[in-house]
Amino acid sequence: METTKFTLSEKEMPTSWYNVQADLPQPLPPLLHPGTHEPTVLPPSLFASELIKQESSTERFIEIPEELQQILHLWRPTPLYRAHRLEKALDTPAKIFYKYEGVSPVGSHKLNTAIVQAYYARQDGIKRLATETGAGQWGSALAMGCSFIGLECKVYMVRVSYNQKPYRRILMETFGATCIPSPSSDTQAGRDILSTDPDSSGSLGMAISEAVEDAMNRDDTYYALGSVLNHVLMHQTLIGLEVKKQIEKTGNYPDILVGCVGGGSNFAGTLLPFIPDKLKGREIQIIAVEPEACPTLTKGPDLYDFGDVAGLTPLMKMFTLGHTFVPPPVHAGGLRYHGMAPIICHLRRLGLIEARAEHQRSIFQSAEQFARAEGIVPAPEPAHAIKVIIDEALKCKESGETKTILLALSGHGHFDLASYDAYLSNKLTDYEYPHEKVEEALAKVPKV
Image (cartoon, rainbow, N blue to C red):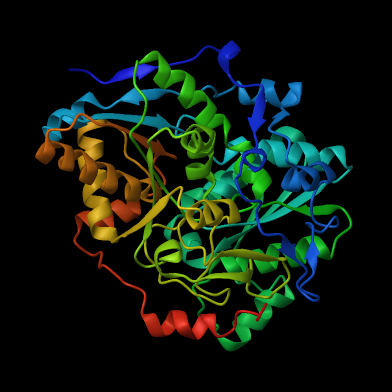
């Protein structure tokens, strides 16, 4: 049987974002000021005024401006697929669906918020955005967003990914952005790191420090973040809102929803619109999947911590490995953040989602199996989720249960073929982050 595609018309694209803060049974713990540890908001000098409002809003639906809707129509609504070929390959009675964000112009879900953040920055009269990127999906998306909205863009890319994925840098530069490896000599934060570790492979926490410092030192610049914060996750809920309409047309409802997590935006964008159903008693198992090399949700304690290495950001209540955590140079470049989105952490705290960690060799094996069945080469990040949906489908084979499994497929792996080459050449090794290294980083977490 062929793969089945479920689409929506432009008129069916949601015209509002869903804000889960309106429905949480317990409110999110507040942001804390990095110096006083008192409740605070996002710094007005760094973020657009509308984004600051959205960050703490409890309004259930927030309307998308018409200009943004028109831009989003370039690639939205995105398709939902029934993975008949994969089901056949696994010989499973499970029904597997995947929501595919790789059809966006930059190949991932990140564009859903990049356009929005650039738009609201322009509304405030800002001329330039500074940001960080791990694997490069977010940097690519913001580069395009700034190009469309008419802003300059500076991207600090984690050095190991900058070296592993040169085509991401080229894509950013094609859209007019400036992309440099982090840590860099362009900021004091970068210079301080290089003075003690000239060969640093970088981390998202380091790159965030550089981008925040860049924005703080210029009146014409805001900072933009591709994940973690509440407003970013809310912009991504277009994914889940579309899925609910699409899967209803199939006559199914997911028993299991699976997505990868680094900061948590694609996973959240898919799952959050299902939370009201779950709170009303609908049974749905929601699984967040992360790398064993960066086991935030599965091994990190639930603490207040900085979002960056230099301690410039507000403190967030999250599962964290410590803001000085430096991950190994594994090939899932977008899943190397030391913390996790506060909303994702809160849902786990409340028992509404669960978390698993997977090794990189097994995730590439699953990605290869998915590509050969479905014809899509997934990015290494969602390959973590693919590993789990295959595991769950095989459980259905053993039990004979006909469960409906939904995969959040955040993007394609066309810029990640060097990682696939390392896997196919048997050069990848599994890495479990040492407990003592986590303890070392956690010792530097502020006492709140």
